Length: 143
Ligand code: CA
Ligand code: CA
Image (tube, rainbow, N blue to C red; front, side, top):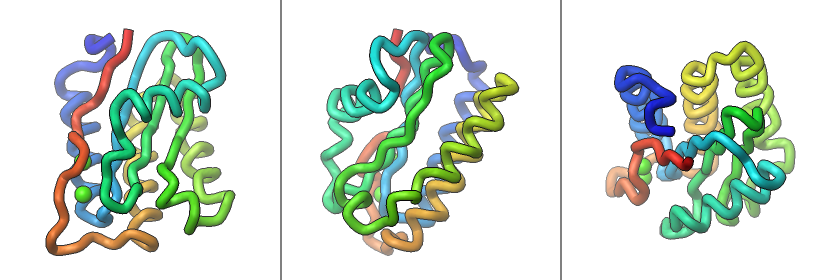
């Protein structure tokens, strides 16, 4: 699955995450796989736990999940985020992704979503001088 993107495309996604994390103490990860065996949200929860994304001090990580062949995706935030943001917080991010993904523009869709998440998280979890990169910015690939 790691061959789904060219190395240039991978670099632009990692760069988008790095840029977004300069706005917020929150952490963003991207997981890509071919098939999604369940609902996209159930699968995102599973992957979130597998990647130990709960290991942030403020529980403020966000997973962007995409299954390319199943045409399913999800955006999942940890409890620290979901206790403070309105329920519709992720809606526009999902819409942004939907628009790009419908055209098969996965890289642009992911980068746009990462940027939007960074800006949104910044309102609730601003970047701090003592920020640590708590979760790696590189893409996680499934089967
Ligand atoms: Ca950080
Ligand atoms: Ca990070």
